[in-house]
Image: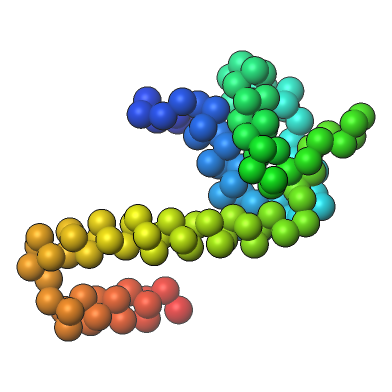
Length: 123
């Protein structure tokens, strides 16, 4: 069963999950995404909550409604997501990370060494 975070509305968390799945390629461009009913049943949440999450995906230009067929990932959606996520990382996440690094007194050389070690273990 899915755990929902109390810090954020469920529709927002669901939208973020769908964005993550599109970004990872679980739903490729042109693919149908699960119906509102299917998601509602799977996650045991109200169908209006799912509809609101899906409407945000439509509003952001990531999916489109096809009458009688369902919702489909739009061509270029993954690129749009990656661009937005990269921008968020560089303008929001990275400055916060650098501030935390400075607070902890981690040197540039120490940081680079740990990044290199982490990258080696990922390969």
